[in-house]
Amino acid sequence: MLSTRSVLLLTSLALWGCKSKAPSASSPQSIGKQGLAQQRPSPLERPPGLAIRLAIKGGPPRLYRLPGLSELTGAAKGKLPAVEAVEGLDAEAAELFVRTPKRELLGLDLESGRVDTIATDVQHAAIGPDGTLYAVDGKRRVTTLSRRTRLVWPQPLASEPRDLFGATDQRLVALTSGREPRILTAAADQPPASRPIPADGDMAATQWGDLVALASDSGVTFVDPLGRRDMAFVPIGDHPRVLLFSPSGHRVYVGKRGALGLAVIDRYAHRELDGIALPAPIAALRLDPYGEWLLAAPGAGDTAWVVDLPVKQLTGALPTTWRGDLPTVTPDGTLLARQGADVVAWSPDSLRERGRVVDGAADLWIATAWQPRGTRSAPADGGAPAATDTANAEGPLYVQVSVSQNPAWSQEMAQQLSRAGLPAKVLPPGSTEEGFRVVLGPYATREQAEAIGRKLGRPYWIFASTQ
Image (cartoon, rainbow, N blue to C red; front, side, top):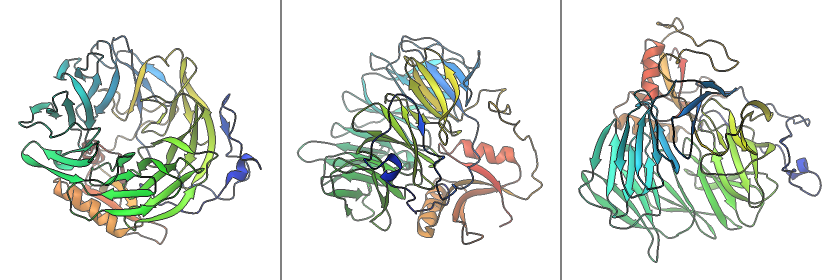
């Protein structure tokens, strides 16, 4: 995970009363002030965030600074036609990807306003960890867009995918269903590889696409798409149905049909860890990109339960509808969700309202750490001005991408980054309370470190070290 995590389960369903009742869905309910015994770790330093609003009927994008949701008038350029879904955003290229009701995949340059058609008849789309966009059309043809370079692959996929993921080295990972479900791994310049898989249930992939988890009635199977490792099975009772990897990829959160709360699996040790107590079975999960907050949807009712992952504590319940874009935890740590006809920004620790966009619920939203030109040094709402140092007086600067207590996992991630051409290494812990830091660098100035961090396509933060 992205910071040192305690695995102690602090609370149980007693927080909800002797009858384990779920909170009312009529208003936000925080349970953070009920005499809990343990403090959560200090919050991470996060980049400023923006929320981008797209009208379903079409029009220009509208930008709002988080967490206060103050609008940045005229900060983004261009105009879109009617939009059906938001597929993602390449922050380094400042390009937003959307799908229209006609199944056209469009790219909007947020700085120039140019709109390009990337592919048509699009059935599936995904963005890889390096910002590469993958699209599969009705004839199984693959189109990619990487740093504004469009490429149509010479060979279509062998089978229709049901799930699609981008991986490192511009590889595509796809799962097929049917009598003989398989996992496919393909690249534009390589012959595809295919492996049979033992289940056709819910699934999840790591951010890097190096491991896929598949749910069955009796447990979770781990599959390496490239076949570098044997399959592994972890038995989980009560019918696992929804899976989600941590940002680092070394834990999997499992919602079950027949039991309360979440199971947690260590993907390296292949064993179940202490779970997370929740008032009901879980039907959907979403994770903060930095791994601090988890949102869980119960099987019935329009509610988002907010879980503080460092202490594995349920902090409260927020009445909201679940759609493809919201609720979500944004890169700056804001909880963004619909409430009635509005879109509201909340503090996830207290469920205190921070900002509101009236009549914003009918539109589509995406949160990002991208900042328009001329605003990148501006403070976030209620924050202090960003530093503008050109040289660092504390020593060399590193781009930190993860922290883990597992040295083997940290070394593997550093190797993946090195294979991608990045100067990655692992810094050993300075004390027993610290973990093994996966970092890039060192860099002489914050500007250099930030430029590298933005190219990662994943959360990062900057720190000074003498190691």
